[in-house]
Length: 161
Image 1 (cartoon, rainbow, N blue to C red):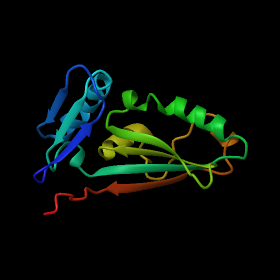
Image 2: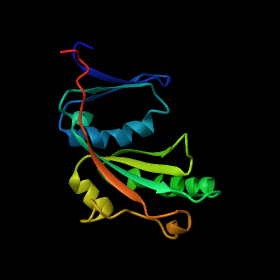
Image 3: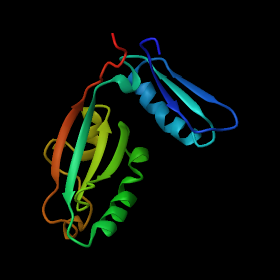
């Protein structure tokens, strides 16, 4: 809207809830957890000024697993159970998802987006660039070690200007 990005949450609730993120990306990231807990009860709009909040460049970590035949559902259930608490446990985790390849459901990725390197160090340790984070007995589900990649998330200007 007028060169500004609005993130609109279409959930409906009894009273609209509007959260303005005035800057300082850390504030925006901290407010996300509170907003996410309130959002099931209220509709919401989050205003993200360019260069603040989620407009900051992020580090995207992708851990790809190749799951043994027949263990896909069990692996996914275990993975979802283990990572579901990560947003509460790791400050600086902006968002995360488990992705399953539509062409080959044995290829599963855990994608996490991090505010900065310090947050990744807190999650994965000093060797975060090369050391995968695994769960006990994970190798029993996999055909080989996790493939780990990191990407920089760069904002795309959609304002047309």
